[in-house]
Image (tube, rainbow, N blue to C red; front, side, top):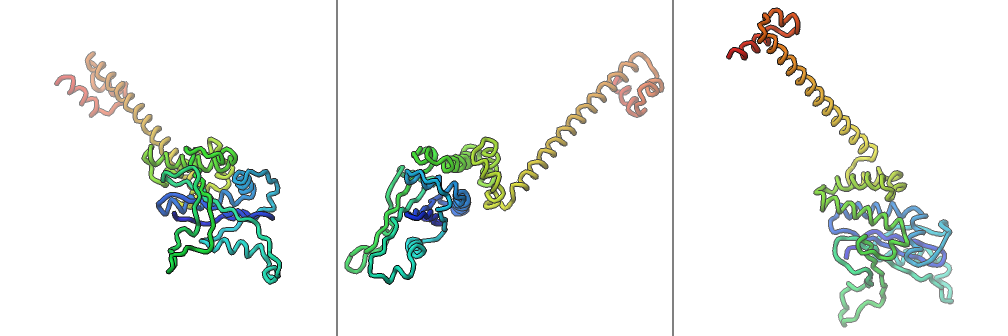
Length: 287
């Protein structure tokens, strides 16, 4: 299982190492990973997520530190930040906070609601067949919306994130949109429906630009241009219909006058229609 950036939520007593495991293809994985990291880089959202994972009710956002690291080295780097050099040289045992490691899975593969993954489980046995002397267990939580994990009830922000991702997938699978179109449509509809509204209003340009290369402002400008184009096309169509209707009425009047034996000169004087058009209608009557 490919593990991406690490999200370390650190308090005075605990360091929670959090990862998001995403879908299989790279561009979407990078998009979701970037959005997830941006969403939970805000301390309020990070504290909410920490409380939902741990079943706690911590209130002090300022005690949380957020770091992003890569690979197994994160465990040692976190402790490196916590333990001073002086502590390392003391004979007394240095108390360390309990590490808790989580992976939040929202990929498309069917996975259980919760599993435990052993970080060093993939290490090859040594010459004597012995395994690693160090181990770390990571709790993998399936946060896909349809799985209904209780954590989604405890963390409204995480639930809305899951709703957003589910909406993107639905647009692709059911509406036949490509990935870019699905994300643009999801951002617009979620803002209207209050799903991650504040986050998307604040960071919508960044979220969209992560994948499409355009900003939210440019998107709205494009949408405005499309609306203007549709409006102009509608006006042109209506104008064309009015002109066509007027021509039909004019032709009908000329035909009626000619049948009453009006001269073409008299018809032209009354209707101000070009003579060649009157003669054309006259020829059609006698044909």
